[in-house]
Amino acid sequence: MHDNNIVLIGMPGAGKTTVGMLLSKTLEMPFIDTDNIIREREGSSLQDILNEKGLKAFMEIEEAAVMSLDTTNHVIATGGSVVYSRNAMHHLKSRGKIIYLQLNYRNLDKRIKNMSTRGIARNESQTLLDIYKERVPLYKKYADITIHCAGKHKSRIVEEIIKKLS
Image (cartoon, rainbow, N blue to C red):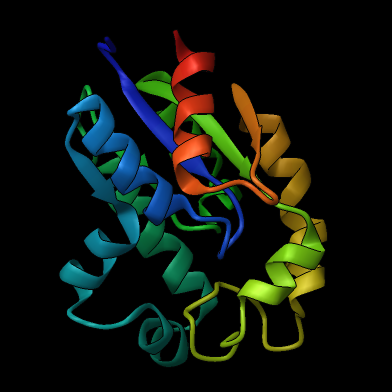
């Protein structure tokens, strides 16, 4: 069906990994989670990397992980902060379709209970709302397709993605 990648972007808690895994099964395409690549390379959790190396280093590690992807026909779930890297986003866009899993702030706020331990790339002083306001314009800028996810089961989201891609 696809000779290129399907790349999921969006806020932490939007369901990129969950939807990505189901999408990969449905389309019989391999699944990659860039956060897992970072964890494996660093031998550490995202939160530990942020705590020990800082935000700037984390962003460099994330960009390097994404730039190292040389795949076709994969479903790729990205970290929520990947949109801060123009290089990473151009790399992903050149190899696939970018799908923005859009979830409004109220829903995200309900889903994310562990802001301080979840490994969310941010400055200490930034709240979830600050990050949301900062990232949403970037998600919209890079998205080829936007899927509104509020109140929808993951299987319905997957159906919508497949419909919009075909």
